[in-house]
Amino acid sequence: MPGVLLLAITGVLDTFRVLLLQPIFDKVLRPDAPEGPITLGLAKPFPVSFAGHQWNFLLQVDLRSLLPHFLHLHNAWNVVALTLVVATVAKGLCDYLGTYLVNYAGFGLITDLRNDLYEATMRRSSSFFHKHPTGTILSTLINDVDKVQTALSSVIGDFLSQFFTFVVGLAASSLWAEN
Image (cartoon, rainbow, N blue to C red; front, side):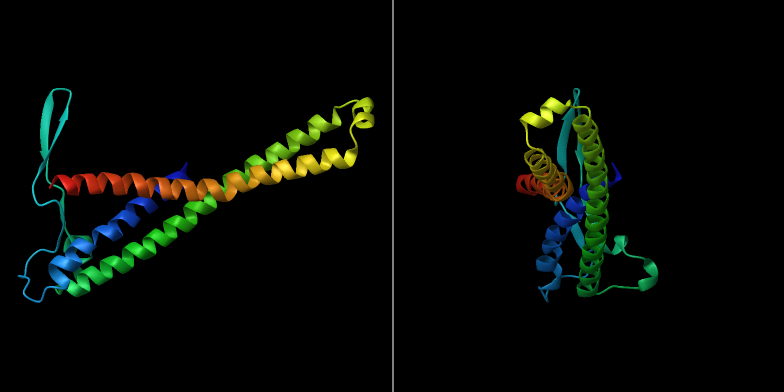
């Protein structure tokens, strides 16, 4: 479960890095941009209705508020650059640890599967081994377990990371499209 949570954070940070394009184009690359907050978010509130109630949310964050105050960063270029570097490093760490934990869980499942297959094979009668050559049994078991191991170790981690990136990116783009 912690691995899945870390991969979800990876998806959020991946989308956050894309959303940093807004202040780059609005503040950093415009020399005539006025001084003020370096905002990331929606320009106007968006309504949310649930169970007959309606709320208006304003999703807007000043990037300077995300950084420690002792850094005394006021230049838009420095704020956006440091935010981008920190988000990239945090995404890398979450991606590594999340993938590691998902792989660890996958290898634990593979170990259990191999033990169960071994026990099931040992319970077979001698007539089973006369009908099916041992080499064929071993080859089939090894190949099948290897395919399951590949699916559980690397494919699931990549799938979860890409899935969360897609979901968060889709939500963010739909919110920005309405504004």
